[in-house]
Amino acid sequence: MKVLLAADHESFNEAIADFVINRSWETNTIFRIVNVVPAIYEYAYASSVPELMMDLRADAKNNAGIKVRHMALKLRDHFHLDNIQEVILEGHPAEMLLEHAEQWHADLIIMGSHGRTGLKKFLMGSVSSAVLDHSPCSVIIVRQKETQVQNNEMAKEKVEARV
Image (cartoon, rainbow, N blue to C red; front, side, top):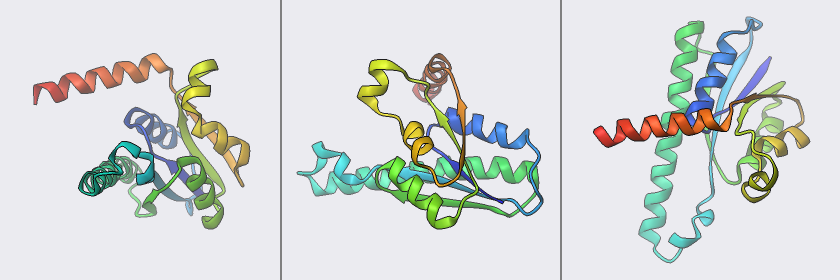
């Protein structure tokens, strides 16, 4: 079985890792953790300054690598297996996840969701909704309430402010 884990937001990554750890999997299951870095053109304000664009891109890829590595280490520590792959992609998140799932022949996608509704969902979009609607395989969405995400972000900001 091939399971694609969409790594994005740190608190979602923890919830996804916990979800995976608390389930039984076939011994031949391969986990692939994927993070999609938005394409550089999505940083339109930086397009007039090439150095800034390159710095933003490098920072985004570095942060993506850290997120993916953290989730991979947690899963490797639990399962004691080396069948956990790490992938960083660049582009529109929903499109890239769907394309990668199809090319890799994923049997399952596990991803997080902010649980936004109404105007927030309309304005900010929903990667999980797009993946769910167009996926070539089954999708499990690990939902976390927005208040939990905000609390996690505020706690992280407090820690960063102290450093």
